[in-house]
Structures are given as structure tokens and as C-alpha cells.
Image 1 (cartoon, helix red, strand yellow):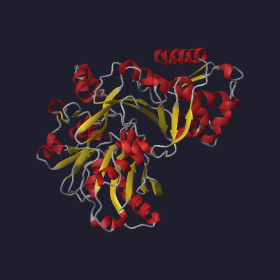
Image 2 (cartoon, rainbow, N blue to C red):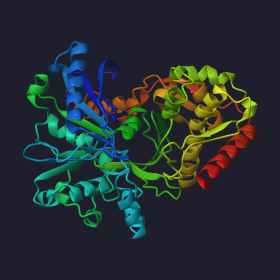
Image 3 (tube, one colour):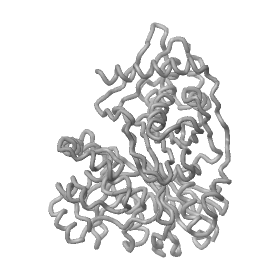
Image 4 (cartoon, one colour):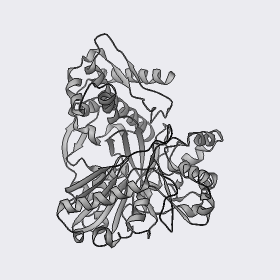
Length: 494
């Protein structure tokens, strides 16, 4: 049993990747599923879709690899974070569709809690801000709006979980109700210093503790799968939320190491080791991973629009047909025009946290065209990343002076990665294995299964594809970043 099956359950699709004993991907399968938008600002998933696509892609990946379930040593799970489900413990039936992390229906609840002065206490204990993004107010909404749900939860009849917990429940046939420390740390209900559910916050939100799952390490036993799913029982031995799994997959195990993942949005994490660093710059303090009962903490910053800005060029402006067309356009742009795009299409994320902002373009001239807009779109990702790293440096010290490890779809663009290195004034490392999220989940399971050694051994296997080093003059870099700052300030003033 030398293979590891990684389940990567995302916001728009589910993937399964089979890794060999050296943690090289050998087969994969992916399946998309629909999103539901019942009201403006509401986003939901059918829980059955989450489960069926995971089961289907896992079987497909095993079949593609040409191996048997008996060859699989363990399963690792990584998942979209904060998405919230509640189901009946006896029947396994959800009481409502899953409320997705993007959902904003609890904005008024968060505003009321802020107005009542509760945010400082919640932030001190959870590391999070009072925002609809997180699971806690979603749970409260479900208990408030589904008839009889709160009394049933108090009697222990219902179970809450993020997506990992929902998948573990279904994979084990309802035998295990558990989550890992990284997913727990994103619920707004978990005290990350004490490593336990916070009864004061649960009481504030009127959430019965009986509803909550057991919290375990990222590498730990999570039960075994039903024998009928894959032909034999397979142990589930690794779990981590997607951005934390990417941190593990990038082997960012030492304090000061940073990774940034570029998908639809961008998530940057800085390993702060055993230190739970409170942010003075509106970053999040979170658990990067937890092994042997010991949490490793991180500062996290999120950008709402990264790869999505390229989708806007394609689907909104229709100036490109494929994402790869942005690079030659950016190269052809007149740099002296200095067009700046602030892609606040759904508001500004960290360190601003201004959901009311909307996108803006500055510096247009009669000569501005598709090339200049494409360049400004790609540059906006670099500027926003520097915003995060500047905040991290202010919170923790010389964080932004080190190497940034990157992954995600946008890292395929050499031009974008070079600009990122230039505007940061720091090296940017792109790994050979870019499936870092699934790789992180696979490693956690493989380590627990004894297939591979500890973090030091795994880190030795991290392989560099290309390092992008800064070539931009410091005076130009500072001038460009100053113009970006003015553009953001103008956007927030509207």
C-alpha cells in the first residue's frame, strides 16, 4: 500500500489526485457542479453535489491509475473553507443547502455584533474579523431560520461541519464527526490559543456546543471509508483547509516562510511558528497546520480578485479569448502610460476590508487600449500582493524581505511572476509541482501512514521550477507602488 489518494473539494469543482509513494501525481479526475444564487449576495451548494462529485472523481482517479483500492495506504482531504452545512445525525440529510464562504447574508448580523462591541473579543480568541466570510454567523442564521433547528441541535440530533467534516461523515458512513484544527480555526467559534471551541462565543451566537465536531490534528486518524465505496476500507489520515494545505504542499514549515496561491482570488500565508501574532493591519491570525497536538500559526491575507481579473478581460471586456493572451498584450503595452486598475469588483480584501468599494481604472488616455488594460490587470495582482506583504512585515517584522513561494493558475504567466518579483523587491519561487493544495493533503496522509517521513524530509523534496528575481530599479518600484496607493485611496473615497 504505497499510493495516496488526495481529495480536493473546491468551490466550483471536486478533484481527486492519486500520488505514488514519492508523492508524484499519477492520475486525476475532476468534475464541476452548479452554484446556486437564490438572492443577491447569497451563494449555496447542494450538499449532495459535493459528496457525489467527490465519490465519483475518487473512483475515476483510481480507475485511471490502473490500481486497486488495496494499493492505497491512505486518503488526504483538502477543502474550500468556511462553507457551512448542518445535517441530521440519524438520516444524514442536510437541513438546508450548504451556505458557501462567499455568501453575504449575515452582513447585518456581523454589523450588529460589531456595533455591540464584540469584535475585539472575537478577534483576540479566534484571530478572525467579524465578517460573513466565516462559518459562525452562517450557523447562527441556519439555527435562526430553520424551524426547530436550534432545539434539535440542543438535543444533539444535528451535526455541523465545514466541507471536510461533511465528506468525512459520508466517507465513514456517519461514524466520524470530526474536523481538523485548520478548518476549525476558520469558523469564528474556535479559540486558537486554547485549542478548543469557545463556549463564550457559542453562547453569544446561541450555538449549542453539541452541534460541533471533534477537532483533531491535520495528520491523524479520521476513520476508514465504507468498504462499498472503493472495494475495501481505506483510512482517512490527513485533513487541512485548502490554503493551509497549499502551505504544507509548499513546504513552508519554518517561521518566516511565505506562500501565495493565485486562483480566482489570492491567499498569502506567512508562517509565524509557535507565535500567535495578533495583526494590527487587518490581517487574519490563523492555524497554518497542527501536528502532534502542537499548532503552528500564520498570518493570512486574502485578495478577492486575482485570476478573476483575467476572466473579466475575457468575459466582460472580451478583449481576449484565452488567459494566455494577456502576456503578449502586457508586453506590447506602452509602459509610460501608467494605467492602473483597482479590481475591487466585489470590494477590497485585506488589508482594507472594504466590501463597499467597486473597481476603478486610472490614467486612461486616448492611446489606452486592450494592451494597457491587460498590463494593468496583471500588475494589479502584484500591487495587491505587496499590500499584503507590507502588512505582514508591519505585524511580524522583516517578513516581506524573504522569498515568496507561489502556486495557482496565474503562476504560469512568466510576465506576471516577474512583475511580482519586481514590485515586491524580493525573489519569487515557482515550484515544479504546482498542485500544491492536493500535494499538501497527500503529504499529511502519507506522513501519518508512514509512507514518508516528517516535514524536514518532505521539504527536501520540494523542487524549484524557476526563481524570478527583481530587476526593476528601486526608485521606479517605489514610484509605481506610490501611484497604486493613491489609486486605492481614491477608490475608497468614492
